[in-house]
Every structure is written in structure tokens, then in C-alpha cells.
Length: 191
Image 1 (tube, rainbow, N blue to C red):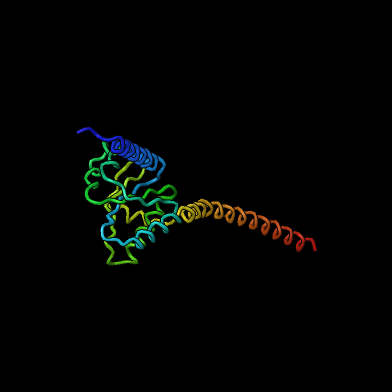
Image 2 (image 1 turned 135 degrees about the horizontal axis):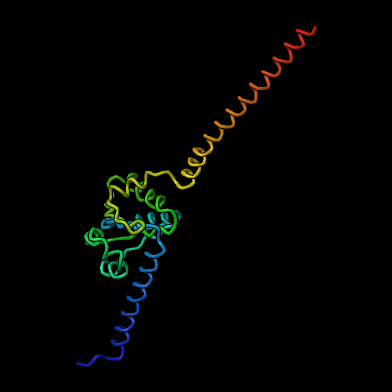
């Protein structure tokens, strides 16, 4: 039986939609600092909306992705990482961290801690081309935000400089006190 023109159009549209989704997913993987794969089965629509909102504030995108499309979009990353391929089974939602990966991991971790009985859990992640286990993603969430790390590093760099300045000030002050003592002694001898 031959396909009608309507069914041919639907078939073509379906392929173009898949191609567009594949391209968008590949683009998100490329632009992301990290991709955290999660188990979302059992979440209600309001819960997923809440997670999406919180992740948007952390410059991250939360999308339910078909495993086969994600595998095709990941391409080389997937081929180089067998653990990532093993993680892509069952319903999967991906968190694409377009900004700071620590912020996105923290939002996920905070949500799981705040909702102890949630079915939402981390399956693994891909950060800078390296696979992270759920435990490693949790450890990443505990890293201080980027701004705090920068200020801590600047403080660490500043500490030796401050110590050097204090030491040099002490040497100069001791030299001045010594000169003053010599001047006072000469003045006392001359009087």
C-alpha cells in the first residue's frame, strides 16, 4: 500500500524534528562546561519546573533527552568513554551547565538534599571530556563557587606579600630606632 502525501509529510517532518533535536543536543554538549545525567522518573511536572527554574538561574539547561539521540550527539565523547555509555540507560534527563559547572552541580545536590524522598538522582556526568561518577559530581557540588575560590587564591597570594612588607617595615623601623639611639647617645655625650 502506497503512502499518502500526508503521511509522507509527517514522515519528513519527523526526521527533520529529530535532526533538529540532534543538532541542538550536539550544540548544547559542545557549549557546556559540564553535562550531568540524571534519573528523573517519578518527578511531577511542578517538581521538574522547579528544578528547571533553579538551574536556569545557575546558567544551566535541564532537558529530557532520548538516550539514542544523546549517544549520537555525543559522538567522540561517547566513543572515548564506556562509562558514559553505560550510564545512558533508562529515562535520562541531562543538565547542560553552560556556565559554572559547580553551580549546576550545587543546584542538583541542594535539590536532592532538600527533598530527601525525591526520585531525582545523579547517574553520572561528563566534565571537560572526563566521566564523573555520582559521588564525584556530589564532591564537585561541595567546591566553593568560582568567586570564592578566586578571592581565596588572591588572599593566599597576598599573604606572603603582606608578610614581606611587614618584615621590610620592621627592618626600616629598627634602622630608624638605631639611628635615633646613636643620635641620642651623641647628644648625651656632647652635653
